[in-house]
Length: 165
Length: 353
Image 1: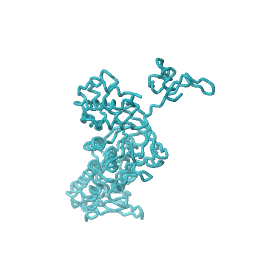
Image 2: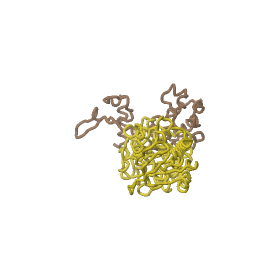
Image 3: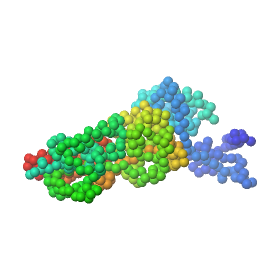
Image 4: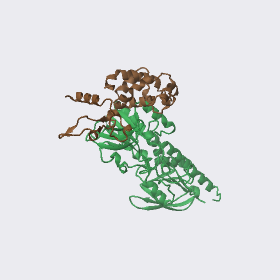
């Protein structure tokens, strides 16, 4: 059995069940970082269950600026580099007030810094943008966050296969 | 009273001291300039600053005319390699003992007033071991990067230009375990250096790892320009440890904007070391019985009037009072010179002191 098949089987078998139920303070750990093999035999002893649960580190390991460069090249994304993370955009955003997962400041930051793991987790939130343009009016540095959101959605679509893997 | 004939003593020949000496001398009043080191110019010359923030003005352009003036003007007597060892007397008629540090000879001079401009030292990053300064290659201070920039050659220990450079802000500043004050200039200086690194190595990636950006006043333009024109990245967070992997430096820290700990490889780590009072300031305070504040800087009588030492006839100027930039030190030197000349003219009118 290849590594990929193994992973898929594990995924299927654990679907619908709560992952990592033995972990104390479970709400702080993302599902994607818990590895819970159904069958883990070590020296003939079944080690699955509580003592076989692994939690992957959430350390960011590199700055991957590929998506950032793509956003920068798009017509309305050219100003993303000006952002200094003040948060005026999120403060005025009517969508952000209703949906906690949509945070224009945060999206700009993770793209700018190239935190791929974070982008994978949050990229779909970009489509919640209503395009009202309040953020672009409030931005003190002329980043045009509304335009950046449009550019980002285009760039995310272009990188969809790697972001949803 | 012979007061006006007596020279004004200036201790320290940095930006503040030189400016004070120049201004006093231009009033026609003689100046005695005492410098502990063998050269004039203070910190910008001693540590070979390449350019000065925020306008990238070459250091020589700022300091050169001052040094030349003090070396050639007939009103200025320069004593290099000397320190002030003690004093007695009263304003207009101070008797100071000046000690030559190599020959240990003591000369006594009569001066009308004293301007103290003993400056600062860079924080020694070895004191804060988490950054590995002094133990790992390619971990340098902003003072060392400044020398590299002056030579126009930014390279690691292997002679190769770095591809990814991290600046770590507030090293030895704003930290109770080292120095709890803000050095006020290192944000601006680091960003200035980041821009210069980008100009020299356009393909390099420069990351600024900061706690707060304090580019005060008009220096803010550096911050904007570095981001908008040069694509320098800013990471809000702190660094916990730096490891040398044998090839690169692994920087361990947290990006507080994403609640994300990171471990990223860099080719060079530049520490924005802070400003602290040097041994010269402590020595001068002892010799002139001036009071130091809780941080070891000279304490002015009123906190926001820097030149007033609280002792008549002794004035303070520059970074021995508080951390400051060259531009501020120059104006403080001028302010202290004004006080010394004012005192001299008052004594000449024989107004009872």
